[in-house]
Length: 244
Length: 371
Image 1 (cartoon, rainbow over the protein chains, first blue to last red):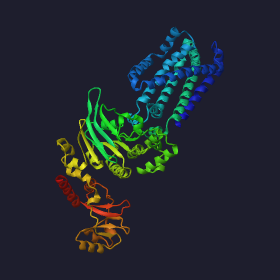
Image 2 (image 1 turned 60 degrees about the horizontal axis):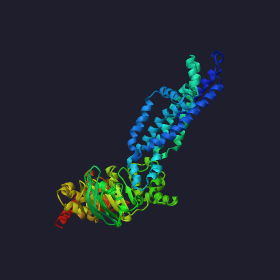
Image 3 (image 1 turned 180 degrees about the vertical axis):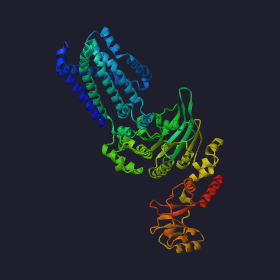
């Protein structure tokens, strides 16, 4: 409850800051091309668009990938896959994004591919860990009671791993909102345009005009995903968390 | 009911976990697989429901070759309770118990009814617990639910892998007693794995003692204690076999049931007279309904007018079904020379003393060894 109050307060602060800067007279006149409230709104929407598309791809590839490498026949792929994706994450996000331009050309697509690759790790890692960390006694009990492989996956493993998988998706989304600031460098859109304009024209307040809505977006998405995560988690698992 | 014929398990790396084990468990019998860790007892049990595939020999369930049956069908007809309990944490107690019934396609109402029945059977209030989650239960309650879940679809056979392993000794003894009582009614054919010889002797109709993958002796608990087949069995049973033999005797077999009592409302003088008549120096104090209240000794009689003013109240009691070694350990730990034997509603049924236990002990070991 207290956390929620802090979050909402922070959110209002960030939005208020953006509105205040945008309405400053000298900002409107000072910079050669001032950003209006409309510019910020459309940049936010295209920022969100990029993040959502990149995340949807990352989820639809990352979750199955993470789960597949826990299956008996594919288990030996777990280390290379999880490790490989992990190495990918150690490359600075700027480098990942920058390398997309020579590879795929300038444009929105290269930006989305870069974001998708960068957002993959937490999803793969958490999907893998979520399934892999289930107490083996539970799975053995299910097997011993006569559940088929499919039934064990559907009724036991997935529901138990779901909170961990959802956490991975949430972390990935929040990270991607930040990384998407750089998308503009390879021809993407989004709030990065405003922030980077501020950086290059050395206008701290313009930087804030882009950075504050980005932070607000990250907080909002994180909050929404946390609620979804919560509503998808069995009460039996939450009671445990509360007692531990 | 269950027949193992030269059952063998060799792992791909050459380890022989189980070597040509053969034994037969009759319907309604509880067979304990006993042995030190790594002796192959759990492997043997898991081969029965094919969690571990056998590499040699045959296992027959109800006369049929188990490897020819559908694996999942076979498991749904064999109740399974394991040491780590393995309750599904995201499901309620009711859903956990209803797992196999649901796999068998029972309608929901029937599953619920069954879960309620089973909860009551294992001594839990169904209304209170059916919608709780495993994380809201104590260790002992989880074990009970584990047993109830194994009984879910009323399977004729139960496999239990140290089902009372991970709980405190007091709760364990209580669960063992309760389970034996339940087994008298349900008469399942049970394979029960344990490394605890006390538990084996107490629970088993038959005990299969294993060592390094081989069956050393398959016998009744009494024969295991008093007619060990070889040195390993003797060592495993231990030098204190006489004490372990106490596990085989229940209080009702040896207790004194005719005993002098006095009512709490009687005068201390009346108590003194009765003691003199009987030639003893203590009496059991009961209330008007015959319920046990405590003890009164000769030395205390002078301190008051009524028995209830001078008696020592006590709550340490045993029941007719308590095994003697538990009664003895209760006597030693409480310092009492005599223990009252009471019924469920605390009505006095008899008395147990050190003398009685000693007599029973010599008789039993003499009898078994001369047999």
